[in-house]
Amino acid sequence: MVILTGKTLTWKEAERVILHNEPVQLAAEASENIRTNRSAVEKMIAKRKTMYGINTGFGKFSDVIIEEKDLDKLQLNLIHSHACGVGKPFSEEISRAMLLLRANALAQGLSGVRREVLQQLVDFINARIHPVIPSQGSLGASGDLAPLAHLVLALLGEGEVYFRGKRMKAAAAIAEAEIKPLTLKAKEGLALINGTQAMTATGVITILELEKLLYQSEQIAAMTVEGLGGIMDAFDADLHEARGHKEQMETAGRIRSHLKDSQLTTRQGEKRVQDAYSIRCIPQVLGACWQSFHYVKQVLETEMNAVTDNPLIFTEKEKVISGGNFHGEPVALAMDFLKLAIAELANIAERRLERLVNPQLNDLPPFLSPNPGVESGAMIIQYSAASLVSENKTLAHPASVDSIPSSANQEDHVSMGTIAARHAYEMLANTRRVIAMELICAMQAAEYRGPEKMSLSTRRLYEKARKIVPSINKDRVFSTDIERLTKWLKETEESRICQVSFSSMQ
Image (cartoon, rainbow, N blue to C red; front, side):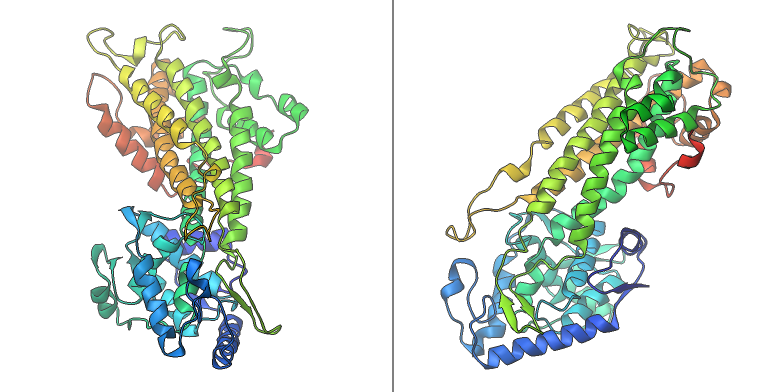
């Protein structure tokens, strides 16, 4: 059970809830803060104090005062009018993450909602009811309005959800789960949709999956080093300590650990003096990717525990402040930065793949074909990898440099952070396929050299992956192999196919 306080959600807890369906509950302190905060809002409404989005219109309509009898209707109209999302729905994991992050943000007790609102979010999480949320339509300020409006529709018993393996009407799902539809009161619709939870949830899923893929890419790169008879001197600890980047040193250490007992690697001067950059510079490139990863992970951890709606109600100080915590710029810039690292992860993997199949760059059978000429072998696997790498380069264009004013120029600078996060996740899927393609070719090259000469680490990977994709003994439809191996890399429970500790990397 994960306890939500609004301030203390960790990565491990988020992973357990989002990916392993662990239940949640509100902390007792959070419940009390929510109660007193809501009481303050109701007192201010009774005093007819003007408060944005509570008794005024929204955006350019912020100067329109709403009569008390229409306050609840205002909130429902807000959800209906803002549910303008389009395109393919977010995955169930991202939808579940949005529920979790929205609940955690409201749990701080600064948003003026009733406890019933939080409980509805918690009940959805625990019943595994995941709203169907279109992935396109957010500007990333005033938060993720359109996606979150679709999330709220489900809380109200409207729209669609995923439940027990089916996509169905929300009303049917909540009836089956014995949950009553939520009815919105003053401020609550606005509190639920003002926020960065779509972009942050997408970023969280991207980080959780990317961490696994980074470790996997290191071990697969180590197998490629074996397939090419790579030079181990480039991974020497002294060399990397001389530069001083922590992540570079750690990557080099893991490569050494993966290859420490290999009989397929060489020393400088045995076959050649230096390897190409895609081999020699694995620690420098992947180390930099790890640096980007750690920065973005830190930004997202802050955002996971942030209050991002507007206005905020500070109970003890009796202040209602309209601000801009919904603006997604911190996440937008971070996700755009992460896209560069994801692109480079695929870029260098494809270059290693090319060295495995190009007969001008190795002493292996041309294109790893068992019958060169009659059979093309892995020739077109490299084509597909190059295509994905090129597509990544277009997706890597920063979304955050763009801004289109909205709401009659009241909202005149927006982050486009959800676009940045979506593109990062798309790029991650492309990159995983490229790395799966490298693994297919690395296994074939190592097999040609002699699997019995592989290191314990890479041999373990080879044996597991060979159960998914057989040896290339004739031409076949490789698309099936690529997709099966990609699925395995994503779904395997092991974040590191062969775990190593840094203490053993020296």
